[in-house]
Image (cartoon, rainbow, N blue to C red; front, side):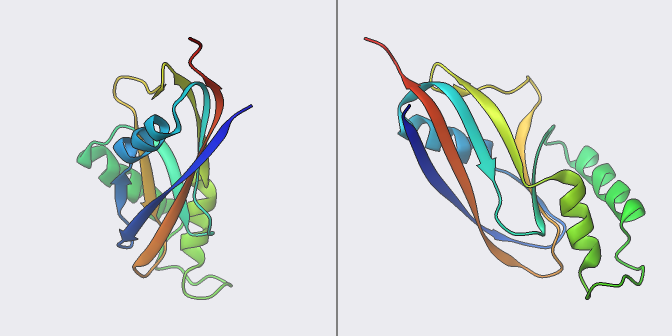
Length: 137
């Protein structure tokens, strides 16, 4: 079964969400795979990939929830970014999407979002792997 991998490079700021839907879709198009799955994965333990609405007010609410669950002000056992690891663990490092007719399948309001949970700016590389079948002639 054919597979294709592309990389999304991001320069990030702590606590920010990044809509990477178009970049993922571009990699899927480059793969020429018509039907299959797309795996989006962030290597590293302080970044997360989620599916949600890319609405600033919702993302602010989500940020507030993450602060309530894993406060940056609490003293943790781990170094200065324990809350970053906890937040990333709660959200998860990856998502899998169906690929149909050469396109990722998302709900009407869904976007693929990267969340930078770390306490310092980072240079991220997000791995996008598409596995599936080419269009039959």
